Image (cartoon, rainbow, N blue to C red):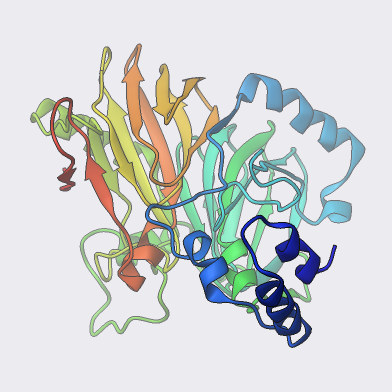
Length: 363
């Protein structure tokens, strides 16, 4: 069907206007007034669907993949978590990619680098490592690990158990701007010239090297140990820092700037006390969650997502979100919030029963 025919068949469009639209189409032009309402919408129209990937169902498929393909063949043995509202896109939201990656004992995922920034959130197993810029960090459940844009990174598992983690990358953003580049390291594993924990002790202890000058836009520390992060949440809970919408929620930060660890992805960790009945909020950043521990439910719009440990779920943009916890639970999450804030377009509202929305504030 031609553009002219399509407009002509619409009731109320004159023959003259239909022919005019047809001539515009021949010049690769079209009238704004016919599409304005779908381009400039009164509220966000997110194609992302509220969805959940249950770990007890995904875990056998991860192991099956390990039997079918080697890390060398795959380069990265990952199962993409593709949002059902975005079929064929390899996206979990309209701006972010997510996947479940596994490395078995004795395996190596070769060193490479790419423009897309990446995070790793360890879900299961110990003994594997991630190497970034010449330093290896042992991966433990709950650890938050960065592989910043254009930095060499590889993974290996000299331990005795399979290790699984959640990948989050800004691939859709890099591809939207047509800025994707990637390279393979000449060696399978990059040279290691820093002791384990070097970056954490130089940058992550409330201290910085003398006369330190920021290099790049990502955090200079690349591992955030769960033991420390969990301890901070529990201390704040005991101290009464309890938000009616989020429980106790903290955001991961770049220790050199206080901002986000990456320029395009924000990451968060929150503790929901047993019996928590959260109030509703909504924000423009569609958010990916991973249940680090516990059991509960999240309501995203009209969808109820019942989750347990290691389940991954997503809440779309600008849909009311509410969390409930049957037992004490910890949720990790990430979104494109920092990118939206940099552009001045991020918005969040706390919703209360029988009241107008109120502007959100931090814990």
